Image 1 (spheres, rainbow, N blue to C red):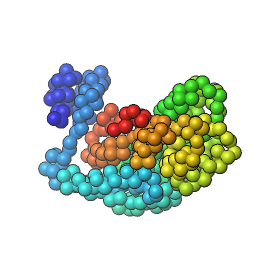
Image 2 (image 1 turned 180 degrees about the vertical axis):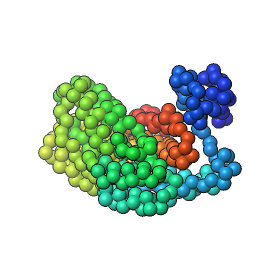
Image 3 (image 1 turned 60 degrees about the vertical axis):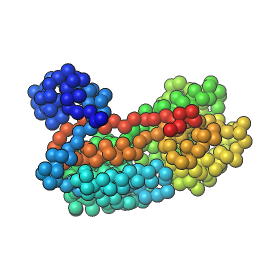
Image 4 (image 1 turned 90 degrees about the vertical axis):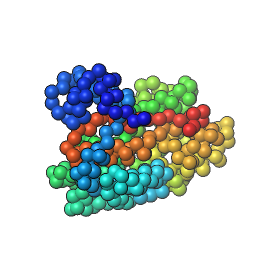
Amino acid sequence: MKPTVHDIARSAGVSLATVDRVLNGRPGVRAVTRSKVEEAIAALGFVRDLAAANLAKSRTYSFVFILPDYDNSFMKGLRREVVAASERASTERTEIRIVAVPHFDPHALVAALEEVLADKPNGVAFVAIDAPEVREIAAKLNEAGVPMVTLVSDLPASSRDHYAGIDNIAAGRTAGSLLGRFLSGREAQVAVLAGSMLVRDHRERVEGFLAVMAEAYPNLRVLPVIEGRDDSALVEEKVSEAFEVTPGIAGIYSLGGGNRGLLRVLRKVPVEARPVVVAHDLTDATRAALGEGIIDAVLNQDAGHEVRSAVRVLKAKADGLPVIEAQERIRIDIFLKDNLP
């Protein structure tokens, strides 16, 4: 049974009127009381449903989702979740249009956002590329009153309204801690495999990983970052070269896509010589590799949660309502061979 405002009031020890004030961002609530209500909302998993109110107003929201179009399992899964959200349009009173752009291409992203600026929908969600030209068009969208949510990769210090994704610095630190513990004090060299340092989520994962290596595992030497552009063929080529140039790599942190190429290389390595591997995103390929013992741990983010969060936030912004940050926080899941769902 879904939690209600009555459950929130009971859990926080406040009146229904106070809950209503918090949900609608109205004044007259002390900070400590507001915190109690928000904590109760997060603990109960309460999701505010504006559908009934908007049905009465005959309101339909028009949203645009701009997604990278390439052979990346996670991004394909993200697209499936957006398609699923668009298929719920009749019940959620939304019209969702998906625009595909080449990956890691800031100019293509800017062109798509310029079309959004011309159309002025009720909101736009996009996988950000941290480039000056993207920030510039984001500022124009903000001036035009178009709500913006960044997905998976953020554009901080910009005029976007919300980021729907994991804390990527924390993800990198988590990967570093796992890899360091798996290697258990060995003097060794580890490789870092990224997609592109153009995108902030990859840069932040590297930043978090390197910080933990420096702080806690000085016995591990981190090799220069390999950029595989999330392309499995290019990843296979570059990782093969890395093994040739640096024999005996003991650990790999794969923080982007292209893991099928990495796995093709690892399957050729004798079992006793295989490195410890921490990767991102639970896909068919990484799930199978966990089961085989080729990958040791996978950090995962729930693409469905990210898409649902983006839709909720865009609706709230379109209605001029506050966003409950605790409700929209995306968690980092850690999967080992032993806890695969």
